[in-house]
Image (tube, rainbow, N blue to C red):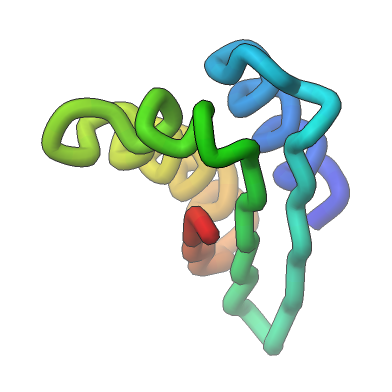
Length: 78
């Protein structure tokens, strides 16, 4: 889980203007991981992207890492 959290932090920090305000809360329940991203309100739209394309791409990247470890992962922006 630590590797996925660090990978997610790296990706999100590259996308936002205020990386110091990025926070990731995580929880694990068996094979299911859930990450809750908290970013500045100004960066929220940038992270989500038009029609959710950017966050969908981020989720796909993290899900591919999780699939290699036989885990399911969910990424939420709050």
